[in-house]
Image (cartoon, rainbow, N blue to C red; front, top):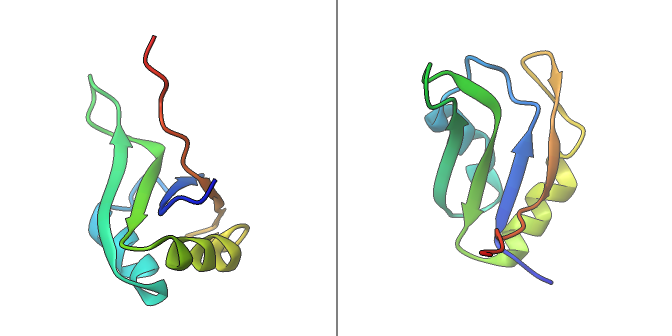
Length: 86
């Protein structure tokens, strides 16, 4: 399954979506970035999603960034899985 959307885990709590986009745009055109936040506090939950215009750029970013250290934390990158509706 080839996808252009990546799950990005183990993010630093202080990182915002603009910084995340800047980090990943070196691999290709980024079409969407979201850092997941807690509903009640609005604080980062430590993970997010980066979507590229094409799947090749996403694959390249996954390969290069998985396990890299960012602000003292080792990133966990994988292809995002779409939620299944019940």
